Length: 380
Image (spheres, rainbow, N blue to C red):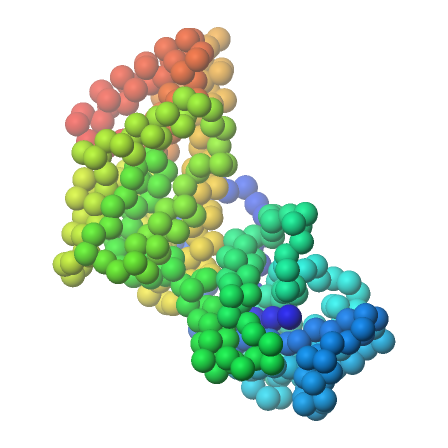
């Protein structure tokens, strides 16, 4: 089965690779790149004509001959679509060209810009060839970007609702496809809309491995918050060892430090909230993008927030290595932690990563004492 889902997000996901060294003006500037986003879907039956055609595929081709595109070795038949009628044949033609070139692999989607006869001048089109049974040796999608991974997971869910002859098209398949954008893309937008300026506490909790409890909310909201935290967390992207894992577990098991979001009040009540200047500096960019209803830009902001945190973590580790041999490097390290606004999180991770290195561990102790004196009881 072949599915295609489109949206006018291409400008949002076409982000140049560059050094992630943002200042406040650049962060605030994200909120200006806004456009209204529409979403569509189309689902096709793909038949490889080199193999013996099944009775089911012949029936589909005969029934929908006006909506079937045939090539030498395959045919593509429209089953359902929310696209305007003039745009669907253009999309089918585009998909056929990609199939002819062997540009689509079963179960692994990808995104490209497509020009269709719809109000948007160009759309980002996610395409995935959904096989009846996933090959056990097929690798999981990686390196394709967050949009593809989220949509790959969602499209695989179609296997649970598809039936021969599509008898449940209106009852199951169509409602499922109509929700792709809401379920796969909008969760970060919903979290930012829920927390507004308090989103900084959630960003800090994600970076510092704090457990977040959501009370007084439905399961969808709890799942949205969990997905947001996973997207913002550095776990799996920075060097971790058994000590780091132990630290994360210890922090998570300390109920006195858990961030609690009580959604039974409006706005939600936050307990055990902790943030820092680094997280606070990103709040306005999130809030502005949410107000202008651009979830793809929201995700890009979240990715750049995480990249900046990783960059600062790598800088700190380099300074610590240098400080083992130079007092001047130690001074530079103090200045860096003071200016980055994320000293508490960086030192927490550095302490875990350097626990087996006595010299580095001693330097971290000095840095913590220095920042504690400079903070004078305020968060650093």
